[in-house]
Amino acid sequence: MQKRTVLEHLTRDELISIADAFDVHVPDRRSKEKLLEAVAASKGATLAAFLPSYSRDRLKELCRALQLDDGGREKAVLVARLAGGKASEPPAPSRANGAGRAVAEQVELALGEKLTIDRLERHL
Image (cartoon, rainbow, N blue to C red; front, side, top):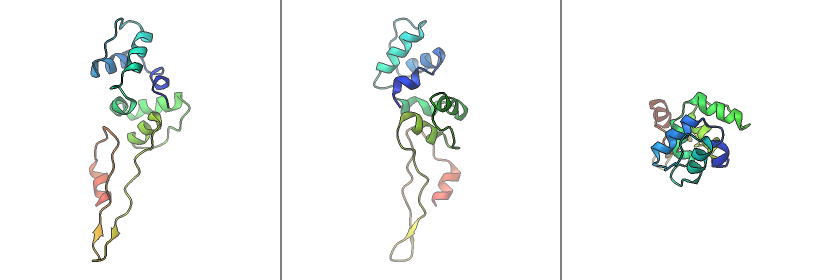
């Protein structure tokens, strides 16, 4: 998904918040179009950088507005869908090494995603 396409579905206040968070200079903050242009041109304000701060419900709204699948319980899956990347997969079951001990698989988290206790326990 292109950054600009997602940004077009954000409110003016959401665009102002992104501009503030990423120090994006916008000459006329009253104009949604000017905010959109400035944030879209910013290299620091990537979808993966600001979407994780949105609620799961808001991410689902954006997915529906962009005709993307809005299914999933984890925000990282929705963020990845909107950002056009792959969602981090749940950790694979651990496998045994030659000594019969389990070898832990690496847990991968999307940018800004927090490791939950539940996910850590599944990993262990």
